[in-house]
Image 1 (cartoon, rainbow, N blue to C red):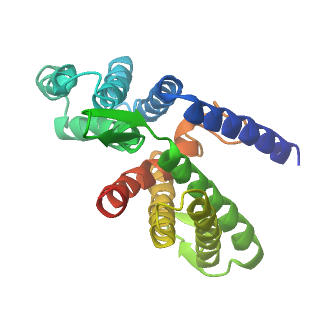
Image 2: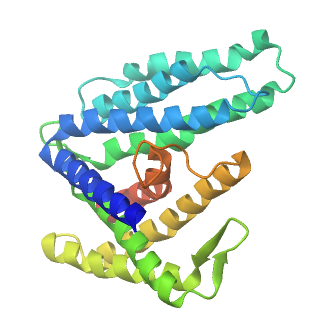
Length: 278
């Protein structure tokens, strides 16, 4: 009971801060998510460096991934040109070339594991910058539109809530027992139902986007968020850890909190660009 209360209080504070920052303006969004990217990468590389066979430079990798997020923000909002990404290319080149001097027994393994968090964490979070930015061609500019990012988080949380409630009460058929024994098909469809209902609230709030598009966007986010949760479960099971960290009391680490979002974000961006903005 005490853990449940702690989890609830942490969740309320976390959601309030996240929503307030996203809604306020683009620069508060930049500051908060730069910190989130940094913490998530720090946790990921921390899990990796526990393996003595893997060589990783944790601070440099965290700095590189955080730079990618900031550079993506500046580029998406048209504050700078594509040249902003050149230092990140140097960082990637360093990651590859440095293995020549480490003399590791398995340099391919080092490359793969060092670059995975850059794609999985920094890359996915960086896509949020392009989701929050709407271009207008008449004056060759852009403006900050947080609606879709809010939708991603709300659909993910509705999915988590529905999956937990329905899964706890009716869950009998295992969704992916090898990776996550507690997840059920009943919970999956319960989470999907909650998100689909929530999508129609967005359709009422933003009628310029069709109800069908809101419906399909919510479904896309739920499907990929579920896969995202399973991917992180597979990661933790492989590394032999229960939580990625303890920065959020009752919730574990940042990676635990954003695992669903990391997979849902690229999928949502693809849907938004192909079926809503175009």
